[in-house]
Amino acid sequence: MKKPGVTILLFTCMMLLFNGYNSCFCQAFETGQVMDTVSVRSDRSESYALFLPHDYADHSHYPVIYFFEPLGRGSLPLHMYKDLAEELGLIMICSNNSRNGAFDRMEPIARRLFSDTQTRFSIDTGHIYFAGFSGGSKLAFRLAQDNPAVSAVIGCGACYPVAGLPKNRIPLIYCNIVGTSDMNYYPMFRNKNMLDSLGFHSYLICFGGGHTWPPAEIFSEALWWTMFRDNLKGKESIPDHYALIATSINKALEENAFYSASLRALEMKEIFTNTAFEIQADSILQRIMLDPLFSQQIKTLNRIAKTEASFQDDIYDAFLGILSSRYNQTDTVHTASWWKSQYKRCQRLITGRDPEKQKLGKRMDELIVASSYEQGEAFMAERDYKSAAMVYDIFILFRPDSHYGYLQLARCYKGLNQPQKAEKYLEITRMKKPEINDEL
Image 1: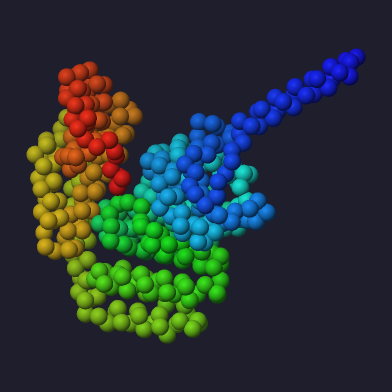
Image 2 (image 1 turned 120 degrees about the vertical axis):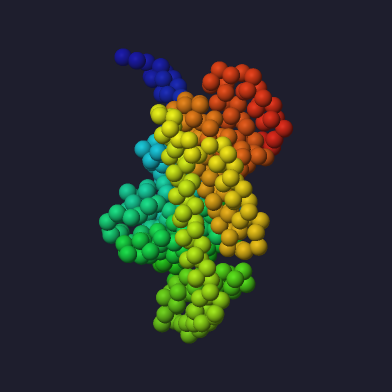
């Protein structure tokens, strides 16, 4: 039999070890400001950025937005939208490890993130939202489809291809945001029509910008609409919600974005039916529809859409040519001179006088840059440095001031055992700003 003193000593040692083990996972959570790095308890190699509103308390419950950032910059959207989260009393969380990539690699990261945060913070499980940008937008929707606890998705700059999906089995709310110069501008319009046919509560917001996280005032409109549809904002919020949409419509009209304004006005009419604002909402919609500039802009956009579809086909065929040339070396069409002609084509559109053609040029420019970025990453992952170098040559043609493109070329030539070329591109890299284009 052990002596009592020995038993007490063993128990004390075990408690010290237990407390020491727990202290590894204890972390003070500050409120009212973004915490860039909070470790996931089940996997210390993973982390997330966190924002808790000033009034956060364990005895209350708060709606939450999980963000998915395509480059794993967890704190980026949180810094952009923290004032909005503070105003509305929201928790915001964004993984530092989830990024563009195959779903089967990202899903386990998301699962560990949910498990950690759901047991760690006081979350209102009736109001869980996902939001994402670019590839993160597609991931957010895909994850939400498999998680009935998610009420809504706010997708920015890209849309999950919903064609072929069954009708919405759950009342998922889906708000999309896209810039008028975003390469995914027209695909998101087509996607909205499909979403409506599948029974989703969907809303599409356009803003004057490119392929990037939307500004805070635009995300605010999306979030208010989402919360209103999710019954998190009741009748008392109707005047504020009406004022927010009306302001957005007026701003769109000032920018001659009549089609974008009409989409908001149609949604406004539906939302405010049988309220004190029904007449005003209907009046705004009628004013837009009867404006001669509206029908003129619709014709212009349809014409631009046809041109853009043809342009996109050329670009997609060119990248398919690069893929096929890995095996048969038969692509003699999409040469370096062909890509230079596409660069000049984009620049002519961007610097022209027609505003809609300027946006078309920017969208095609972004499509080529994003495609070369994604395809280059895929080639590098396969250690196909020769194909990757071809793609990164296209990247620097369109982004000659980018640090990223030259650095990747240096890595390609190092992999190809061509040290002189690798050093050449490293030297160029040293003269460029050490940052990746935020709009990728």
